[in-house]
Image (tube, rainbow, N blue to C red):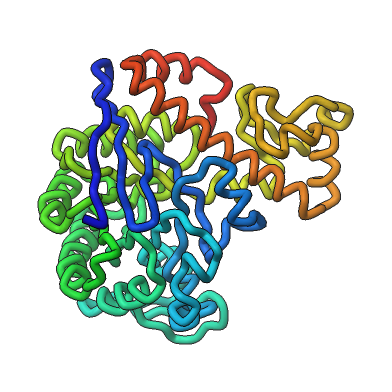
Length: 371
């Protein structure tokens, strides 16, 4: 078996679990946060730096890699792992979310989606079959089905149409997928409607072999709505595989997600906000541009042992960000993904010690509980 998942411990206090997901490029302890390397790189960081942060797996994006450099080049290089010099597991998104969020002009049919590239306006088409072909060529360990992500706030009928089309495309994705060294994760859709989410789960679960994803959340809705949808789904999700909540990565959402049965997360948030001068720390969220840090010569986070926190002061980091020096964004990015890797490690330890509800309650009261 190239892929397997086993629960190592279930917290008697909360029901949250620590698991081990085995892939062709290594084992992953869950719950886990995956830094995003959209274009085959976690922006500004080397693979060695990402690995030292504690990251176990990273995510890259099918849409962006298809447009540049093209999946044929990646395939000729020996696949994503060799192309980008990352020897641990990789997950590729199908590009579905990007098609619907970045393409200004798009046409959805039963066959697929026609859209204009956000780069040069050229006409592109994604079908379930072509998305799988691209992901097969890229060669990630885990690949996602091509889905329809409806916008928060749409009518029930529109959300239902998107969910039904996602289910039809899933069947085609599964029929097209042939590589046994890649695991296809299906995606539950249904927008913010309880009945559609449960219906989507029923249509999706038969295609879930070693993982299932929850998409279409964190797209503008209130966090309480997202938590409600997770609460609705939790009792019905299969126990014998990891549950992946797509596009979520703030510290508060990670803790709340694990309480609600989530095992895997990804988000661009920690690196995107880092480039703008924001850091997650044990003392709360910090905007390093703030003038109060001008003469603050303490470490960014006294409880962090990453390269950034061991070597640079808040004053220096503020100077770098204020002067648009590349090092500033690099160091805050390195710190943020290290912080989230350590947070997940703390979560796993609390689960193993059957005290995760206590951990979550303390965390909610702390300065770390920030979006």
